[in-house]
Amino acid sequence: MHAIAGTIFHRWYVTIFGLAFLFFAVRHLGWRKTLLYGVLAFCVGALFENLSVHTGFPYTTYTFNPALRGKEVWIVDVPLFVPLSYAFMGYFAFAAGRLLASGPWRTRAPYWWMEFLLGWMLAVWALWVVDPGSRLGDQFYLGDVFHYRGPGFWFGLPLGSQVGFGLTALVLLSLLFVLTRGEPDREVKGGLVRHPHLPGLLTWHVQVFHIAVIAIAVGADSIGGSAFLIWFPAAAITAVYWAAISPRARARAQGTTASVERDGQVDEPAHEARPEPLGISR
Image (cartoon, rainbow, N blue to C red; front, side, top):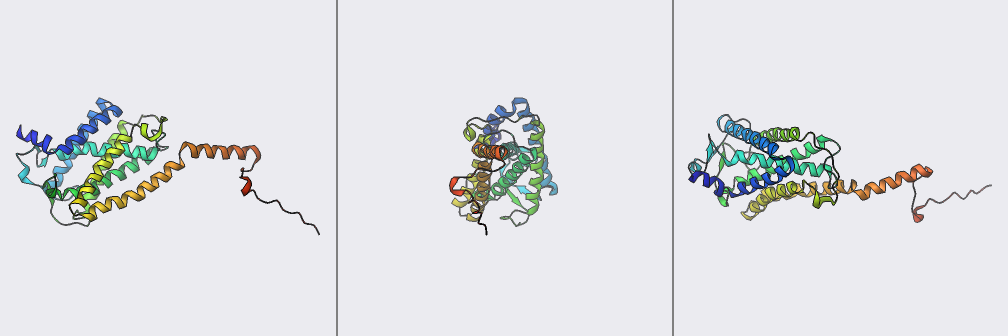
């Protein structure tokens, strides 16, 4: 009981994100698909984490703090909260990627690969912020969790660990895309505030940026700053894309098309009308 309480309450942030995942995923996927995905994601996490601890694949070799044994539940040689987090990390990136690709006024992008690519980017981006921030856990509520065998290029993380999680993210997103392959594209009346995937995007931001803010607070400005440096161009590109596919932009484009079909020319404002040739003759 002591270990179970330690997993639930000592890892309160995993509990909160896990409950958020259950709430939003059930509303989206239903209980059956949520349970199926959650179990599969947990199995993937438990398998890959233990493989890495013993063989170095797929995340390179590292170890978890043995002092945590007895204080919380472990699955073989990995604390239970680690593979549990796979489910919500994958789902938040998946939902956020769909929203970024579809825009606020539709539930699906024109092509599935757009959603997949952006979801994959967000999943990898999240780990590139959360993982190096987690290494500083002994300076805040996370505590001393894990240690890599050797230093790496990304704030002490080996390149192999990031590549490995990129492959894992592909697996998790593939599971979600298979489970939702029949979802139709629907219009979202009310735009962003009523979009079904807005909670996923917001929770993804909370997951990533609370670690970035903590990193800055404990003096790791490079880790925290890198998250915001990546975020600003991504946000700007998203804003431009959403503006281009907005109902106003589409209506404007349709009006231009109608003008072309009517007289073969694009209507121009009076102050931009082209001057007629003077027709001077000799």
